Image (cartoon, rainbow, N blue to C red):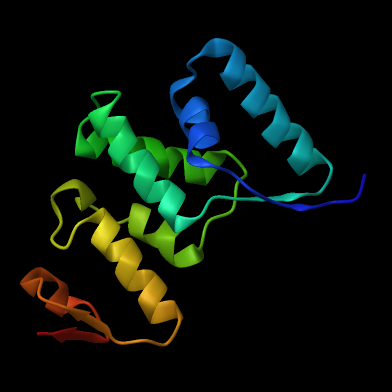
Length: 134
């Protein structure tokens, strides 16, 4: 089988993060490991990162800080690929209390990567480059 480009859904990422249910975790873990060994590039998009961030808090009861730590460790050690700007956001210190927050920074990053100016009413976002505060 030739190497492929694979994009993981939030349901797969969450199983890898929380190892529940165990059978789905094992299946997801084996799939990602085998895919990488075959030379596939396994991706996790910004929307999946954002959705997983909120699910870890709302469904699994993790704090913002612990949710961000789990995502950061996953991105750093799992072998999956994320946008380099998104990985850099996850490495920012004190991200759990940062203004603008994680998801707003992901949105800004995508906008910036596409050469667009980020228009917002969020005063805290004005410190981000290429941002127009309305």
